[in-house]
Length: 486
Image (cartoon, rainbow, N blue to C red):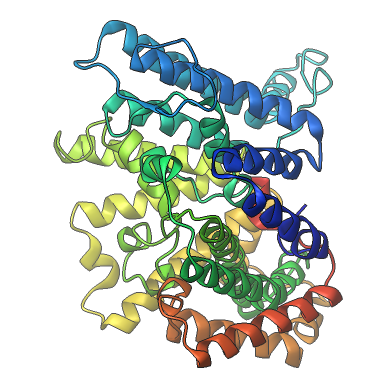
């Protein structure tokens, strides 16, 4: 079930909101948890069992960190417990159990097939035919496992550090992990950001109206901007052979698609959270206005970049242990960030390129990259670098990515018939869609800012966008959010 579908928008969401608001205060979290499990199990009920097991482990770890493993009644009026400090050896072991269980779960389901295929390729290259693992086991990747394992880990980490108290009420914790707005594609909601909201939050008309605005504009981003750009990207990347200009157009189209696709999901998640009284943090801050790759990572997928910064980069030493260690830390974080997105050498290379540019900027080579360019030119150069790296996200495999990059650099001779791709990607509908997307990227306010105050004029704009998005949705083929696969 995806947000941009009639089933979700006209049946599941209204029914969920009605059940939520009809429930008494003490029952709201149980209601939200129940509908969230229905949402998550819609594709495969077995995924629910996996998430429940992960959630149970971290809930018990939280109680252990707080020094009370005995769960109380779910209607207990004192839902939060403060852990005991200073941290003990027992607490460190409990945190290790949480981290190992989550990372093992993520590692098995996300990377087993990748490791097995690489092992098979290695042993066959050594002539050891028949010792591969290609037929041993095929693992299906559960939806959103990268998001809910990171979110669940953040609970144990925040409790261990004292940034938030542990939850005694199991339903509250189940609700935190399973909330359907952000369950399968983020944003990664840190526990310390919503701990107080789980205990008490306001349900106001202003929040609900702003939530509708986020939902409508997010749906517009998905169906009116991301999907048409995605068609252009698909035609360019699937062509097999493209000229230099066409390759760049395809890469730019994919850059637009992935941004508006993911930011659309984040907007809709934030909007539905507001409808239920929750305020989630902003996940994007106009990343394509960045003047460097360092700035790009301060604006792109903020929930992931801050999670990696706080829970990986800083524990590794950050920039406190000298320039060499700083460069190593940056490289490790970006390589692991690439692997988090997917089990493929393409994602490793994507992370490596970003890590290399971050290192060059950190050691003072930013001037070598950008020189004394004016601000708009720095934005253009940064966007070009980002577009080039997105090729490794979109290409089917590493050879395809390398060949596409060669086309972008003008290092290949397009095959006969490659010019026909222009007749497809330069159709008026796609050209107008790309131009409109560019205007929204570089000239329009962010949804977060646009919805701070809803005037009558803004309400008309939002309504128009919403209904145009509904119309477009009825004519488009099934096109799930890109980040569902991560």
